[in-house]
Image 1: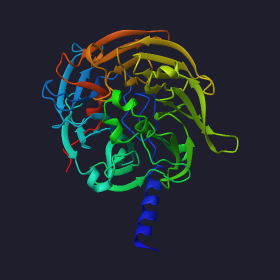
Image 2 (image 1 turned 90 degrees about the vertical axis):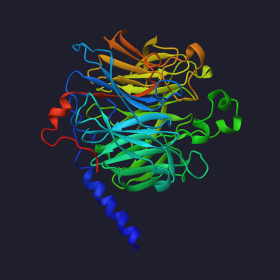
Image 3 (image 1 turned 90 degrees about the horizontal axis):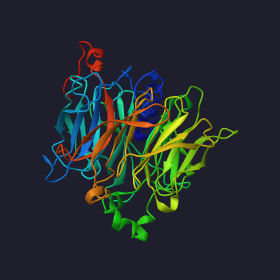
Length: 439
């Protein structure tokens, strides 16, 4: 057996052992985090961290992490209380906490930088402590998108590659200190297109799901130009992959046409299904095993009129798997689907929440919902429709009621994209072993 094979088997065994140490989701926090993330927020969140795209001529023009006070009991409720620059402008997009919640990793789709922020030492005032800028050189992957916490590790999904800027790509596994551990190419055999977007893990079922989008040649283009280019529009993902989690190997490719994006597992005990929305075909798909235990993908609902391309973007499932929020970018609507029967989701509510809407996050108890505006710099709307904001809403199970709004242009911050929740209690949770700058 070759040394490379031995190393591969050893790494697989280590990952398998690590996956036994699963952190329980508990009864708090937002609903769309990795199941390995500890130090969950119990009760009311204090902060909303927003990853912001820099805009030339707006403030310092740099990508940045912005902190908003979101505790209604605070005198600063609904106000920006801190901002820290990434020291570059590279299409800020998604971010994710490490498993111990001490650090927040955030990526740029254009420059492929990974900015690591210390959010444990002082949760109200995150600090940039490390920038990983060699992901393309080390892995061949560009566009770090999804940041998924694993025990002592961060799994990063790339959207594209250094060779041709297309969608064939892979995942990079890092230590929490930023050292590259391994890479995993997306499947290109047995129906795989090699494309990637999101990651979602169900440790109890030993399953990881990945979805698919498009390459840098497409996502960095003007949306108006892109949709008129018939050849370019052929190069969007139409698959999802089912992985053997412990082995970190794809075992089945599912056909899910139309760019399946965010994946959400039901968090209810005993459930074994996930749901995903397709951006281009405006559908909800259910991913679950059939009677024989084989994982399958099934179209279960339509979001508005697909011929109008409402462009469903972010989704957020509630804690018991009975409801799903869906944001559609083009019509600026936020919709709620009843998932009591996941085989037949039913839309029960909708509201226009902006001229353009993208990301959506909800508190664990489901009574607070946060919405951000920006999709991609070159895909956002223009003129008066180019709103850039974070809006908070209260949800009573029947209707969304506005709570506060932060205008990111007025505040000279840029374009608001991904959001994560924070708490001042995290600092105390670390005790004497507080977070220090990475070494």
